[in-house]
Amino acid sequence: MGDPRIVHIELDEATIAARSAEIEHERKLAIHDLLEENRFEPLGFGSGPFRVTLGLEDGHLRMDITEEGAAAGAPPHVVLLPLTPLRKIIREYFVVCDSYYSAIRSAAPAQIEAIDMGRRGLHNDGAALLRERLADKVRMDANTARRLFTLVCVLHLKGRG
Picture (cartoon, rainbow, N blue to C red):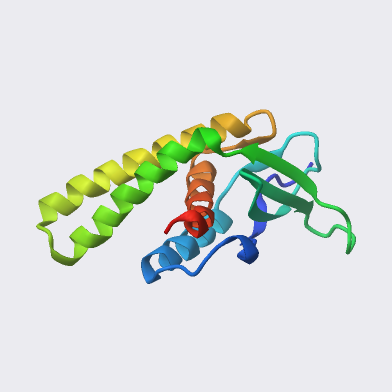
């Protein structure tokens, strides 16, 4: 029996822009937490463990998935997910994150906590939508979806201006 989890994940650096210190911290934390514990099972492809590269391609999230130990040069299993259904929640998440990062510099603890609760709620909503949209392609647990949603948001930074 296999090991349905991600053991290596990276972002296609060609599809993202420079990141602020806060966003870089979120990216590193999401990757660390994801690799510590995740459940990731591409349907109809291998039994794991998996190596994943995330990128953006023509308005889609692109996941290049290979099994750990696959022969060098083996073509990846590619999962494409249209991002249109996620765009609104990603935009809202960015707005709340910007407010949060501003608040932690000068706001009262109660205000920071309120903004953080909103941020976490949107993050959960985004993760649930990502998991739902990928349900026929990849089976994953809620925490894996949360961490992947964080990374999808990092990929979207290139389009912000």
